[in-house]
Image (cartoon, rainbow, N blue to C red; front, side, top):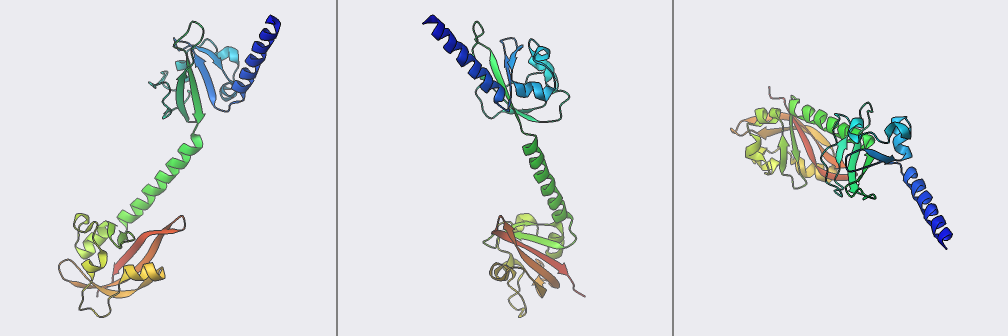
Amino acid sequence: DFSKIENAVLRAKREWEATFDKIPDLLILTDSTGMVVRCNQSTIQKFQTTFQSIIGKPLSGFLEGGLIPVIVPGDETGIEVQFAGINEWFKLTCFNVPLEGQENSLLYIFRDITRQKHDANEILRQKEFFESLFQNNPVAVVILDLDEKIKSINPAFEALFGYALKDVLGKKLDPLITDENLQDDVDLSRQVLENGAIRGLTRKKCKNGLIVDVEYAGVPVVVEGRTQGILAIYYDVTE
């Protein structure tokens, strides 16, 4: 019976080790002093080294900056970290895994988030690029929501029509720059929502009452196949 129990324990140990080594995340088990007592094959492959080169070494020595970041065991939010000499980024979480005689031992899990971080940085870069185009465009640009209310205007819009963002944010565009006495005026917002992209010539009213001739264009802002708002452009062609 003892032999059967021993074999079952050994089999369970081998199965656990095989599972531990098959996990693609980097797994590093440390004792209460932060020394590495176990790691999986993914860790060895990432470091391009051997178990002997890692076991018994302080985990902090492998991390960028030489310090283990403060992290609450069990908190799955994680912290972004890098290993010294490795360009990839990892999300670090840890959990208490009590060892015999080592109640404060920790299992550190490093999940590669390089792709996600690259994608997030690319989205941010594109956002900053288009924000720069919007703000520095010499043509008046305004962004509306589906209720035809102003979400943003650029400096050229302020210069052309005389309105500051704080004066028009959340207000409908057309009543602000439409003169009821102008017969050839156009309800740009309604036409874009009903017909899609439009362009043409019209006359608009500035804050000070001045009437200006403008070339205009309006397009729906479509995200993932759904219209989210309207982008309108006005170019002063007054002679």
